[in-house]
Image 1 (tube, rainbow, N blue to C red):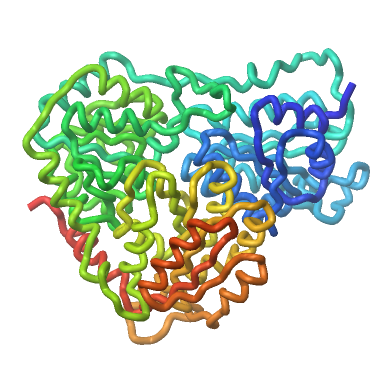
Image 2: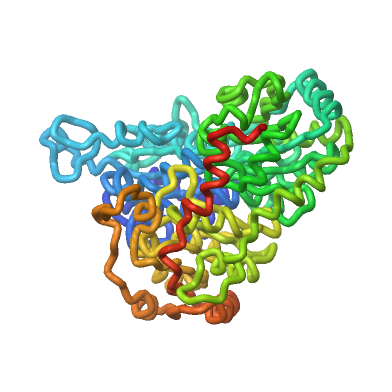
Length: 582
């Protein structure tokens, strides 16, 4: 017989786990003891927050659950940022944590205990607020079965985070050879199947698209998160789910001659340089894309919940049930028709829904490509070519765009930097942009970039404000330690720029100004290359150097702090509120 900890690591190997992201502590140490004997690489950043983001980004990119492991109190606190992003951005994640129990002393509320007993912390209650499912096994057999189910539920339906709380003897004792009830082989127990829309619903959707004169697709994060692979989401031979319904989305756009707009989280589900692309919708999106949606006679919404920011806070003139035919495709039946009544619901994985539509009909119109071209004009502005110093953020984004190709990923943080990118970065291919937009936490982009370089063969550019970068800048050291080389662009206005610009009075908002930190010295101390950038030409050269380098580069880009994001968006935002359809 072998211990539960040893068999748990064997289970992870059988399920194709490449990395465990985490931090040693508590009862997961028993688990970590066996990792050196496996083919799994343990990635240990400087804290559980960064580990959680790395696990979330791995799940988002690959379709396989990112594995986060660490001691209970800290996974349930510092490690929550990645778990919350996983839940709201539909990224598969499995959390392996523990209760820090102390055996016979547990009823006396010892230091760090997280079982939920009197005098202790209730980790189950903490996880219950975020995890899609969680387990608290009390025997070795339950431990193995719970981990298998955690992997199954992390990818079944709408992906998200699941958690297993390891406890005392349940991780250290031997696993019975013939337990009752029995356990099954990991690949058998974790297998899932994709849902597909009914033939009648597909036929109704096809009829609506064929009858449309102005059809528009709104593509959301569900297109990124789709895990379909020809009818089953079991892993390919290389252990990775076939994530992303990109080809199917492009096929439907071409088959029915549709304009394609995206939600914020759906950015780069469709190349924004394509002749049918309109850009990003919503209160922080392009007015051109918003107007295209309002002018549509038929809307095909795919994998998008239509949250208030995506829909301009439900502005009456934006989406209009009764005047527009709405087809809503989503893997979760609750999301279809949630915000706006749908005429047709297509319930299933985005790949299945879009593939069925592409095969069942066709149509054309004289409106789509001309109207989309007009919408794409919102990607440019005079500031994008401004040579002044400090650098206009619009110009900084255009310099980033010049080095982004189909083999480059941009990760965006929270705050103004994210919206400059959303508005002016015109993605040239699918899967070239991912942002912190589930829960939208600051400090996401740099650890996400490290994870992206570990799990893909692409170059990665992380973009953050100086506030967000300072939160997780130790991820630069992690990149150095694990031999990856993202380029980090810090759009530095020595403040919390978005909050500072939100003030409506002349008085300052407390807490928005920062000391001017020497990020160049910080980067060099971590073993990276640091460069202070004050002109657009310097930025262009530094981006090329960073992308070609084999060590991380941190570019401290001094931007014009008076360039107001809210003013840039005001015409789109306020016109949307007032009603786009006139």
